[in-house]
Amino acid sequence: MHIAFVSMVRFRHVHASSAIVLAIFAIAHVFNHSLAIVSLGTHTAVLHVLRLVYRHSISETILVAAVTVQVCTGLTMVWKYSLRRAPPLRNLQLVSGAYLAVFLVSHLITVFTTRQRGIDTDLCGPLTLLAACSVGYRPCHCCRVTPWRCWPFSFIWPARHAGTLAA
Image (cartoon, rainbow, N blue to C red; front, side):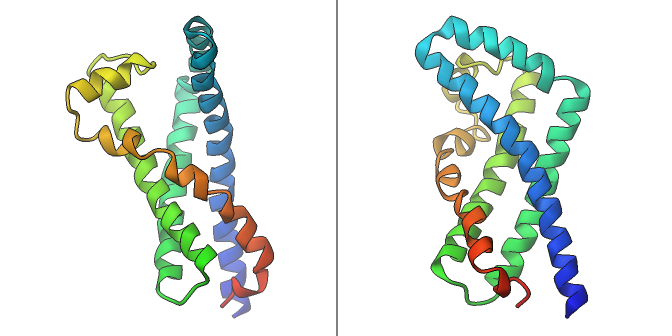
């Protein structure tokens, strides 16, 4: 039982590490989008600076790897914990985690498909794709807020219920 607990702790550590990488990117990404409220010029200027960093081949590889790790480890945990009874907060975490996995995968598909079509992925790009009725794009942006509202619970639950993780 001790080996299984240590293995799960390491597994969750890998999941948390990829989450940190994604959180750093997400904060910069959302901050940049929020600048559009103030000024489109400011948003565009910051976007070009941020793209120098996160569109670099090394950074992009790290981000895609982090998404892959996050989705694979997250869905594994969803599968493991969904097979047993859980408190409502854990169920909220599982549902939001599964939704976040769908969001991340659809977002990556959208970004790479959009770039391949030669459409810029700035604030006008999504409008172009919605006008073209891109099926792959709608799941990504029609419901994008839900997982981010539930996701903070994933940090609260394990700290309060650390003893139940080995169960």
